[in-house]
Amino acid sequence: MLTRDRDNVLTIILAGGEGKRLFPLTADRVKSAVPFGGAYRIIDFVLSNVVNSGYSKIKVLTQYKSHSLNTHLSRGWRLSPLLDQYVDPVPAQMRTGPHWFQGTADAVFQNLNLILDENPDHVCIFGGDHIFKMNIRQMMEEHQESGCAVTVAAIPVPLSEAREFGVIRVDGGKIRDFVEKPSEPEPTVPGGTTALVSMGNYIFRSKDLVEILRQDAEIAASKHDFGHNILPRLAAEGRAGVYDFSKNTIPGMTQSETGYWRDIGNIDAYWKANMDLVAVTPSFNLYNPYWTIRTYRPQVPPAKFVFADEKNRRVGVATDSIVCGGSIISGGQIDRSILGHSVRVNSYSRVQDSVLFNGADVGRYARLNRCIVEKDVRIPAEIRIGFDPEEDRKYFFVSPGGVVAVTQDGVDRWQTSR
Image (cartoon, rainbow, N blue to C red; front, side, top):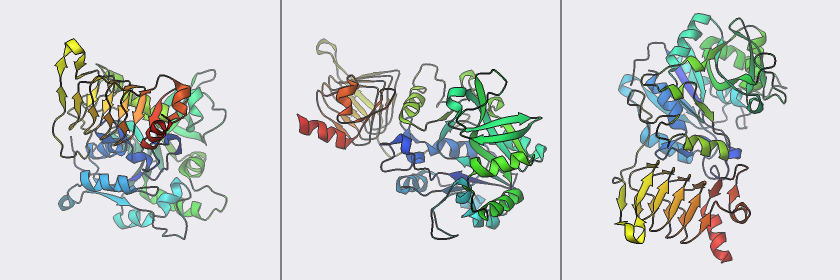
């Protein structure tokens, strides 16, 4: 689904986040470039929302280990310049001095020329590292009607999780106060169990954005961050509105997707969001033809399943799983798992509740449980990963929830110890 941009909108995607809590998946790539759902990168979801909503002037601000992201954008996200459509990666350029981005607001301020050159009426500033579907045009309509300088997309989360986000208090449809990552979040209603938090997605009136960024840049004590500085100030001035994401709808939307938004900031959250995709009726549906999630797809052959030797239990089979092109299930079994492109699962092996990145190779008789396997890793024959946390920690990163991130250097240490 693509509609015409008639609102004179520029979209800026903040995709420079280091993603320390997703290590080791971010050891060699920025968080927004981490693979997700087999065929995609995390950034594909916000980009798909933008273009499906009819907005096609997009700048992607990068900084940290951006080569993988830049390659992905150049191969898969080429819009039509003939129609004045583009997805432009913008590296950190130090236009305001010899320093990297000091905060999210500073990232936009250092690239203020992008806004001044394009001269839009409104600027969408969205994070590049969340999993969700959103018709941004519905949020835009509310923003325009409100007359606010900024509109913030928000969603309720349990109080136990709210301290990781900007917490919003609302009065009369406007944000009364905005507190970034409070140690003791206040519930939305007294005695309640949830708090309303920012999704990190904002729509600004262009002139207001330029003005407040310039003012903030002159404040030495500022963190130059939207959550810490810009939004609290606009809320205090009565110029910040809130958009209830839970009422957003898209064509072909399932009931389970209402309000679905995941900040996959750590290994456990990342793994859980991937597992949301493989149910018979998934809580996040990749198969909606009316809201396509777009990406670059390499030229690989179809997936193949071989061997049906039930007598010797050598059967290539996948249940409740996603298997991308080029993969070969060669006499192994996978269950509730996601395989990227060109993965090989060899005979008598078993993979369950796991995510395997492109090019991974699982040796014979290997057993993987609740694992995330990096690209091109060669899993040795007969290894067992994900069954003994103490043993796994000797070689791999194990999350608090027991998910094992498997890298080649960890495999090499395991083999050396044999």
